[in-house]
Length: 95
Image: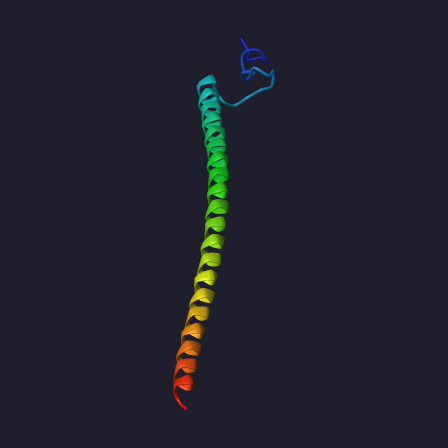
């Protein structure tokens, strides 16, 4: 008996193409692909959440910067007023 195309045929995959993987390897590879796809989806969600967090933090920074500028300008106005008051008081007290 001689080998023929039926006895030495490589197994066909479910899609009808020849494959060098056995069904267990195919299943393992498919599970790995699903795991990677799931991990990818999780990373996309995490990325979106982090982008939103960054946006919120940037808004907070802007508000803090504005508040800092307001405090600084009020402090400068206060210091100018005090200096002016003292100067006027000293200048006004001398005849």
